[in-house]
Length: 116
Length: 112
Image (cartoon, rainbow over all chains, first blue to last red; front, side):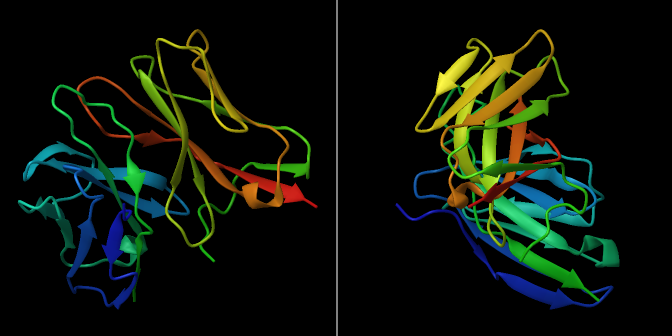
């Protein structure tokens, strides 16, 4: 089975712009979570999508948003980019079996975003 | 390569030795714990997990120990190899959420 894929792998933007990142989960996985990784803050949870609905949300401003499509693929969007948004954005997928919440999450390689 | 932390705790071991990486988790309500390995330029890779109804779980060359009394998790790697060099993160989750809370990470440096 192919793993979690993320596109693009690298991205350079300027302040004020917006960006959309894409994630394709492992085939058959229905839950997709997004995390931000920075040297200063480590790995922080952004949000989780399951069956096209946001199931959980972390403590990030409304500039960070996401969505999930019927094929479980997910996108996250960051509007009005700030310098501090420079980070590695990681997507993780899990099976999303009925009745189970805590499942193993498998991560993609990430998208490295640099905001200038 | 990617930097996952400027001031990560570092564990330096000799090839062939056993490694023990420790983690103090934050939430006493957490009931599912995972260890991830992250190599430079890559996303976290699942190593092993444990649920709160267990205190030990073994995998191939790895063992995870859970002490709920003191909220402590450890990862033991037997016969450490140069390919084990990476940053290791513990993660916890619990309740009605799939949200993972990650520790700060430990850099494991294996000396040949």
